[in-house]
Amino acid sequence: MNAAFGWRRCLLLCLPAILVGAAIRVAFLTAIPEGFYGADSPSYFVAAERIWQEHRISFPARRRWLYPLLLVPSPALLVSPARSAPVLQHLLGLATLFGIGWITGCLTKLRNLWIPAVTLIAAILPQMVWDEHELISETVFLALFVLTAALAMPPGALKDRKRLFWFLLSAAAVASVKPHGRGIWLGCVVFAVLPAGNPFKWGGKCWGALGAAALIILTSGEKQQGDWLLLSSTLPLVKLEGSKWKEYRDSLRPIVLRARAEGDQYPWDQKGYKKPLSDPDPSKIGPVWAGLTTREKEFSKVCAGLAREAILDHPFAFANITATKIGIAFANCDILDPKLEPPAFWELQQTVNDDRWKNHPSELRLFYGMDQADYEKKVAERQTRHNPLYLPLKAAASRVAWMHEYKDAGKYRLAPGWLGVLALLGLLFCFTPARFAATSVLWLPAFLYLLTVFAIADRKAEYVQPVEWIGLVLAAIALDVVASGFHRWILTSRSEKS
Image 1: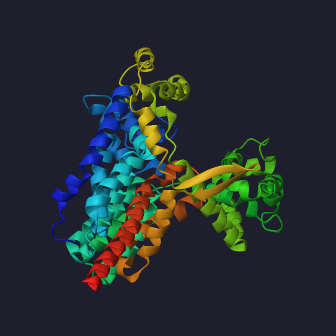
Image 2: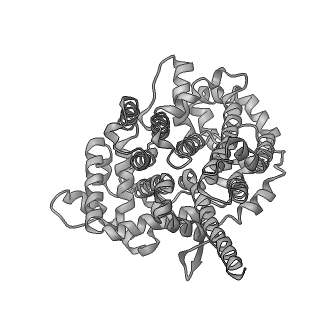
Image 3: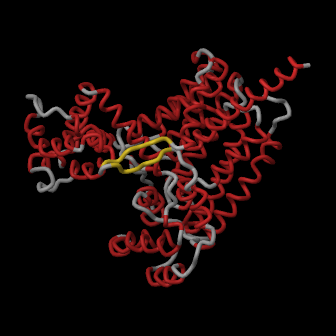
């Protein structure tokens, strides 16, 4: 690293992006001060609700550890969790831009050019802006991943045992936010061997951080849900013949044949097959399978067994399904959510909250800090507002194209966008000996994350948000290599002429 590059210079280079990002987020918060309480929000907020209303400590396995713990004190703040959470998450998003800039500066030569460019694009990423406003853990998840990678910079920094300890502790924190973080944690630990050497010589503190991560991983997440989702990802590949679980194979036959008929379009339609597989309604698949869904342990065992068998029998087909889902998610993550406009935001929020006010009124009173009558008055006023930066942000975000999705002859197809091409080129440069060790803290955790998430989950764009910034850094590396090479060529030509 150039000795002239430090924290202060990095901050100055990130400042344009931070100011633009702040303007976008202030406009958003002014138009919609309350955070979105989405489908997953109650499962994160339940720990706070139980502590404040039932006076007991309880963290469900699916939403355990860091993010629910951070929400626990929110009802005691001067403003309600509905208003404090999005403000804090937007501030964290702005701080994350600095971490992205630091990593970019440590991995490129023309950092005066690439740090402002990368951070400016990161500041307007639609999924990042929206996730900061919803009561979900993605913003904290992203920030901790960026912090972990930043602790490994400049390249070789992990030779310092103190820095290595904080790196491993930060990686453990990533795993504590979401079960999805296991792939990132594993990638970071494998990477650490390159600069830090033999793990058995890392010392007790570092092994303590590894032990903490192992404990977190073993005590969070729902195995049953993972097995059921994995079966949905392998459904067209499930073997229908076999004496083991014959009655369940026979019950699944119609839905498996329907999934096979989708052909290469199945990754686009997996969501429609996911819910029936876990539904105890006999009309969905059949009475035999419906009965199985009520026996949790057996259901998990059968789903896992059928899925693993399908993967072993058709590894390349499964890899193709997984890769296609990743491509679809990247094709859709540049679409600006219409919920950033108040009328669309509150229309959907009202639809979601209608049943909650009937069934869980105390939960919403705690979240919004008001009863239903005051909430309805607030919504009526909020729906008249306007987000002045929505259309400019939508226009800018639409030009951030990793992949293009289009329909040809009734079938969906994918093609790389300009940023996707640059990111892939940058990834190829990362495999050269000069850059392999320094950049593997980015692409290795990202690869393991995408593989472990999309092998199970469907094609949701929100799943690429934690690694989307890495694509920007890779694109900067590609342009930096090309520009630096062109600059050297010019200097060489001039010296030869002279």
